[in-house]
Length: 318
Image (tube, rainbow, N blue to C red; front, top):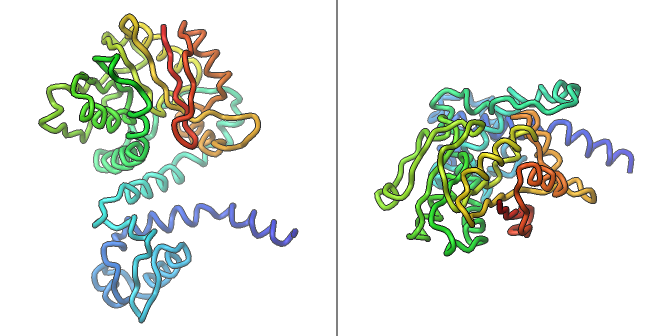
């Protein structure tokens, strides 16, 4: 039992091996040239055969490729990283590698400070080419939930919708495609507006507005959505944003938050919570924490319901 626990703990300690191995293979465009023999892949990638084979064997251990009759093949998992599939996970592997190398080393200092301080998300400072990669990853993750989120709300009672920050981009696109009576606005920092190409069918009903959320919005709507967004801010900033959202809400309107709630009975979400701490200074919250923020913002929680395995929909009114 002890030996098994030692090995399990040791495996957790080197979890970054997996992150960096996958990201390295993506950065080297390795998945572009599989299937193929070692000689074929080496010729296409211009990588030395000895090191290339070591990388391929590591990917084999991760069940991303396998060797059959001297030919390297993509596994079903590996096909998710193939450019031919246009899968967002390629971009996500680079994003998580960048977060691992540039941000997580700050965790001890964040813990030592003992209080939450907001710091700009690293994506906001990224070069344009890298920002495009990050956006592709974020949009891909959002697309996994977007249909569930859209269907969780009765949109017949709404006419205008403000979606906050980049997580709202795909949400708004799917929403406006299915609800032809709605007008939508994407509101958030300047950097999140980059690399957005609106289709002709949406351009007349979908407005992009770059704006600092910590300043008065100057916009109004009868629905405001925060799809897994508000946890990126510490309490002080989250409260200010909620207050501005309340001021932007038209009479009878509603604010919709999609958030993972922490539970005293389970550790689920706690690693994500640490990632948010080092990335922006924000946090995942218990429902009791959200209720305190809502009360301070003079908002009433009308409904809380689970919409998918780990996400709750919180419905607020002024």
